[in-house]
Image (tube, rainbow, N blue to C red; front, side):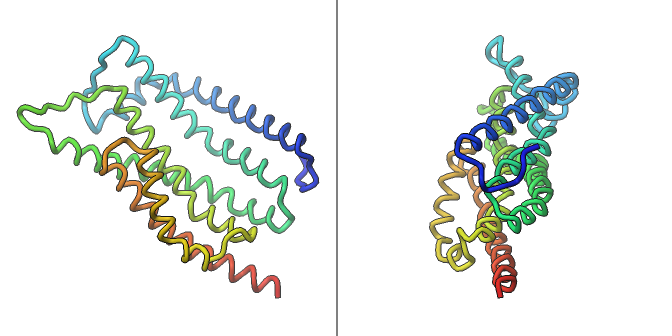
Length: 239
């Protein structure tokens, strides 16, 4: 295993990145084989909120299963994925920063999983119920398996990633890139950026975008509080 040091050359960093990416890819492939063995049961569970789905081309059902397999593999492999990412990041950090990363890597995993669970069990059902409420006697919903899997997958992955925001802000504060005052000063810019990002990574409806943007603004505020704690401890430690 590579030593944690900040004396790596540029090409050594590239080689280390290649190794980490290969390990991540192999892990996802292995997890995908495991997930595919239970794909029928997983599909039944995923489509339960809407009942039946339809497909409009011969390959849609197959591609939906492949997509679902890939997403399931990412969730299962997420502990190793996060571990490999952190192992690469710590190469350029000092000893104190490495200790910080080691403490918060497990928290990062928990936030990732919490974001996905929050999206699937709360956000997705609310979004679907709201959107389907616009159906009528002459507007009958016929949801395709392709669009539904894409919708659920995008929401789950988006929330899994954005739930890392407080930890990211804490980390930026720890290494001196951000301060609580800076985060507060840039709050309006952050909200605008959050709305733009929400529009880009969610399905093209306002409800889904707001379902992501509102929690993300809340996470930003939590990140400011966490940043204050880290900044205060950092100042005490430097005295």
